[in-house]
Amino acid sequence: MAATQSPILQIRGLAKSFAGTRVLNGINLDVPRGSIVSLLGRSGSGKTTLLQLIAGLHEPDTGTLVIDGTDMTGVPPFARPVNMMFQSYALFPHLSVAENIVYGLKARGAPRIERDRLLAWALELVRLEGLGARRPEQLSGGQRQRVALARCLVMKPAVLLLDEPMAALDRSLRADVQKELTEIQRKVGTTFVLVTHDQDEAMAISDYIAVMEQGEIVQFGTPREVYEYPRTTFVASFLGTINLFTGSLVARAGRCQLVTEDGLEINANRATSGADGTRRTVGVRPEKVSISRESTHGANNFAGTIEQLSYCGNLSHATIRLSQHRVIEATVVNSDHTGASTFELGDAVHVAFPVEAAVVLSS
Image: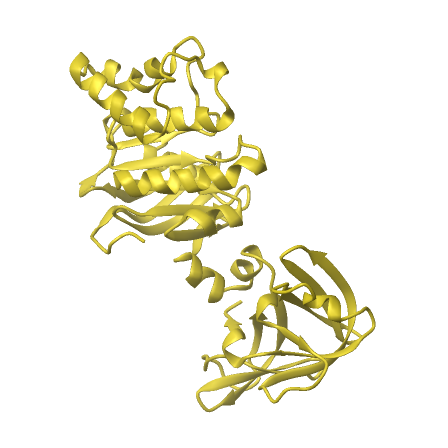
């Protein structure tokens, strides 16, 4: 996790429309120096447009954007202290690995001795020593990505922008490349801002996640914060799987209770604003739900019947029907050779989850 320092990137009230359609709607964002921040959202949420505004490829309609203490209003892309790594990597096929890496330095007029020094540094950093003479077509997908990353980092940007950096890779390669990317970022300390629609990717590599929906940042925080304490039903549902219960609030000392239309009483983890009768939604992650044959004495305990069971290696997923119109999902860790195999379809069971696992959502 990056140290807490003054933000290297400060965005206030940033808005952008194309052909009369609003794409970004008053974005406010502080990016901590030396961190990895993911812009996470569905297609059309505005994340790529926001990245392009930071890069200077478009000018905002309104708002300000400050990088490393300097207002970027009217500053062209080539004069900004940023570099951008594109989804396709955009390597020159007729140039060698070494020539691709130093291309920007050469265009900037850097002396040969500086180019050679930074080339050697970059090749070692991305573990491509000895491959400088190869052409891009002679490299694997992961190696081409590292060349593109090295080409950006030799320019020593204050902020490196990455547009779907894993999209061109096979899923089997992504976990390894994610680790490499985070290791490289930790070594150089450059702030990374990346666009992704892959929740697992954002959770794995980010210090902070900005969840975007319809041109707005609806939640910003650490991966743990946005997953464990989502503010809205959209964030809760977009980041992983969650059980949602909608009903009316009943005030309780220091916390609250939600009564659903089918009579379930869900005790939530904290008090929330709203008078008795306020309609709200409570979310509970499946991994917080335990299954047993006997009733427990927890605050949230319900009888049901196992309707589905799926064995997925390290985990098993179960669907338990609580009533005619209500099911709940539970995830069981297969920590031994039995796991959820001790249960069968049709078994009568009890499901339970702690008060702390039930999060009240704002909408």
